[in-house]
Length: 366
Image 1 (cartoon, rainbow, N blue to C red):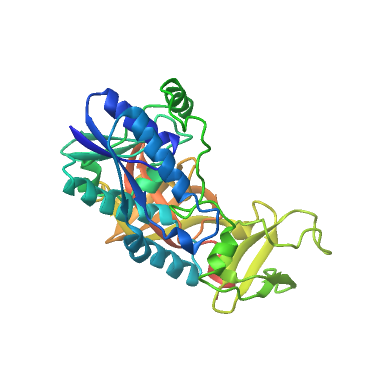
Image 2 (cartoon, rainbow, N blue to C red):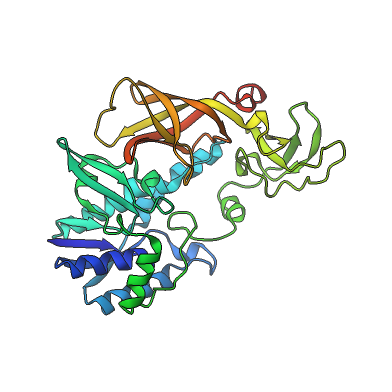
């Protein structure tokens, strides 16, 4: 089988290519350049990553090429990312990047070059059963990335291979080391999809200028000044600069809500403060891996952020929206993030969190 692997220059995609080559497939590597590097400072590592990907392909003995998807990334991912922040939400660009770029533009480019399938270093599994493709959680739940893949459709999933789905990260590094891959000890990337690791607030300020405003308690007491309401998200503790305030109880302060129109950020003390808790959320733009929901009303588990243990809930579906009612209160659910649904190890799909019944959202923003 002719397979094109999305080579990131990291250990995961490198081992994915290695395993496919060992399995006897006709493998090639493609490095995606999805950002104009000269827009940024020296923290952007695209050139280093490309060199690493090229070195791995040479070591494995597979063809290498690269492709520039920067225009597509700007139009389909980054513009949406900025709009969401502008409107006071906290987006997850990796979900859109996967759907539009890694399993969109990359898939189209690979097919045009003659590939039958694409492969990535994502920790996930897929199978064909009951007449459709299913997306399954990776064996290594600590690395599972189905949360970021929940928006893929049947065509994208059917055209994709996930060679690392049955492996743990330690096994992946071991295989890379044994094969003499130059990236076997390379640190995992943790930054925004294709933008990299940098001071996030400084990066965002280049596109959404800072607009300082008041930090307030739910009672209306002004505690200090924030740098711009759009930069903050529910549950955030870092960067508030109000520790040890008089009339406080000594507990840490957290963002509990914000009013972007009035440029106010609300804060309160306590990790599990009632203002941060919700039992219900509404998700929009819901996409189902199978193309349709399991039923109009059903029970499952859901994650409202990456690496959260799946939480028991009931789902009510209405068109491309759904309401999730959780059995237990959920902390710091952030509009703009994804709510991803599961039936056991199977990822059913998910959508963008539009709002919750948290008191901070319902009352303070009024």
